Image (cartoon, rainbow, N blue to C red; front, top):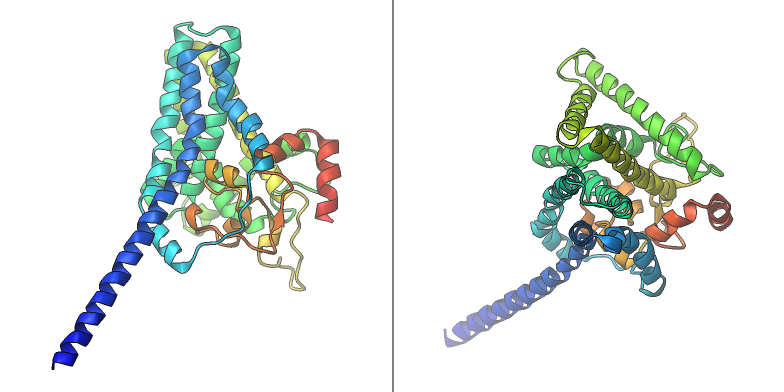
Length: 371
């Protein structure tokens, strides 16, 4: 009996120690999770620019397209994937969702702050340009990019947040076309968001922007017919999006005049061109093979250009691990994996975006990698 008690006590001690070790590891992982606060650097810089003025109005743009590319040349890349225990921990940690949700008040807060200064003539021409470019960068990174992540969720409130984040960029149709079109047709001629081999980014901007919008209407019409609803009905989401965006623009006219409307239209265009530039570098020149029955092969990690540059991964909520996102679209950003067969960009996303703006340089670097 005494031996049994000692054995039981030893088992309890061992269990207690294991729980303590597990809790210690979990706390350590939670501290590491705070690294995603790096995604707030650009939003903070936007507000700093709006408040301070001068050269600071360009700070978010400089951070995104000067500082990050320079740092990524020297900072390490990581191919490390999470363990099953880490995946479970991160999926149960609400911090990752909260980090996304906070982008909604930040984006709209920045827009209101910017328009307040514009209406009250607080900006010089130099500051106006800087604030517009930095705000557009914010709307692309914290708006469209976060909307992309939330748009893949099944929770209705998260889907509504995704649509709200797309609104200032006037790109609400992205919610339909990306989920119903792009993920199905990626790396095929049917996908407007896949850049063709030897297609310059400037041709791609026009083609992708136009075709994506038209495709969104076609996809919604197909969904309505499938569900037994009329095209001209309250069930048509594209009509909803058009009305909401029109109301948004009218509100700007009322409070910031026609000049304010033109400014916000320019900011919106800049923000969605950032998205289209990312689309360009993510799938440039990649094509899925057709099977004998006419269907395309399944989307694999090799059908997206990937980047494991640590800083870019953090500030874009792991968007740069794009191969795994397309392989399993429902995966949340914090658990995306590296795949050895995924094609790797030679540089991080910001540097690659800049390189794409010079087509001869882009073709020289990337065409041999495509082949």
